[in-house]
Length: 335
Image 1 (spheres, rainbow, N blue to C red):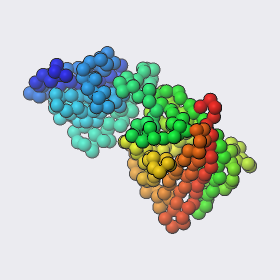
Image 2 (cartoon, rainbow, N blue to C red):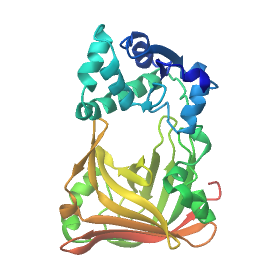
Image 3 (cartoon, rainbow, N blue to C red):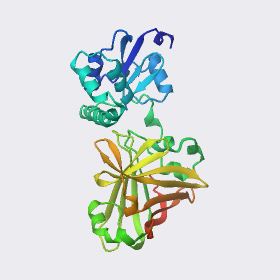
């Protein structure tokens, strides 16, 4: 790293195949009194010492550009904040950047939109991800469980085997006892319409669940098919997104999400309620639905190397348990 610590040097690491990032790199000018700007195209320089240092610090270059000023690393939104503070006042890009990222609050609102535009351009051009952290080599949930990952039983490793940015598919099948009562029963027409959890009372419902990955995202995708007796097969789809560490959000149709933490405790995988959110323009906005819908919690427990039991419950502070399903699943042989 000696060649990176030259006095008054600033390094801007960007995605050279992203038109938005490339234009930002070429347009950026920092104030002369702050230092000399060096541009580094991450796609052409993965072996560069600075990229190696970035990797050690687990900064994902697919999630945002990096600015290194000789002592600190600024990633994504913070890199744009750096530009707004130390960029020159000349040039359209510099003025545009200052207008969007001059405050922390405005940066939080603006950055998800800008990152979304970048990702859209990458997908449109069918450009592969940089993947400087080699995320495709590890399961999505390994980073969520952290140090507990190696403690999970074999069936849970199979269950959560999907890797990000891949076309991995794993399938389980089993039977569930489904119950719905209280206010959720009254709202059942709305739930059927919205394609959320099935508001039904029935035992031994055959269910198939496909866990899928996407080549474009780090999301863990659920496709559930409930085969109720007197209904056509009902599909309940959702996507799980890691927020930070073991905190995740499961997003249903129309952007409504369940925020939770994932734990390995006492031989169980436990999903603990943290509230509801609405995903809007890249932001997760808390919404006060707990008093209406109740608090959701779930657990999974290994039975043997190919099967596990699971349970989901929604408990209302006034009416008690108002929804739930529980049962046993088996990994398909081709999973």
